[in-house]
Length: 283
Ligand SMILES: Nc1ncnc2c1ncn2[C@@H]1O[C@H](COP(=O)(O)OP(=O)(O)O)[C@@H](O)[C@H]1O
Ligand SMILES: [Mg+2]
Image (cartoon, rainbow, N blue to C red):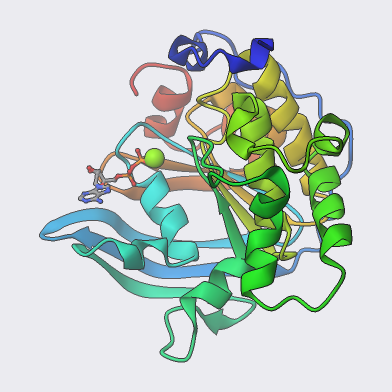
């Protein structure tokens, strides 16, 4: 039993009294190019009659880590799922507005959602490896897409990219489900990066993990940002402060209330509602 196997939900609650900007100690510089990869324009989302997101417009820049924070139910996951059209899979869900990926609206009729999801990979809160071998978890998507390169090589590169290779290289045939929680999440990250996406979406990827596994995921996100654009939902403000370049604060009502450089958001928020949220007065 490794310590990573504990999934104690209490580890996700942190004292809001701690200054969220206290632990900002990122080592590497990001390769931010200033180019917009994703541009959301006037996104409104409804589940049946209920509106979950209200007029969201924002640009996500290449090579940056963008954090989406805000209280539960404010639409962070809904917004993330708009980007790779995962909301298509929810019958009651209707998305109005445009999401441009490299300038092209992902909601255009000629966009294949499956191909879109190879370009915009996703990692979920609860690690969800397939009940297959470690090797098959990573190679599965490549085989489906008819990848004509060296699959063994790509599996190794993806597992290395997810900081998992050294731990699993001698057991590629064993089940992904036999790994610890933190390893399973890194396997899911390897699976997401195997098709070499442009963007990786992460929905609270560490919130089911213990602090050691969480710290590994945070380090990994820092490494991933050298090659990918990352959009991450977290309700852990210290985590957002540690790992992101930009922070978008969503608040109740499905509004995007403030979006800016992470340091600025945490040190000097413009909106009183955002200040109340990040200082823990509500949330
Ligand atoms: N599949 C769904 N069906 C109906 N309502 C949903 C569904 N998913 C989310 N919602 C509602 O949409 C709102 C935003 O939810 P969500 O995007 O999950 O917020 P967050 O990720 O910020 O906690 C909430 O009111 C939630 O109840
Ligand atoms: Mg959510």
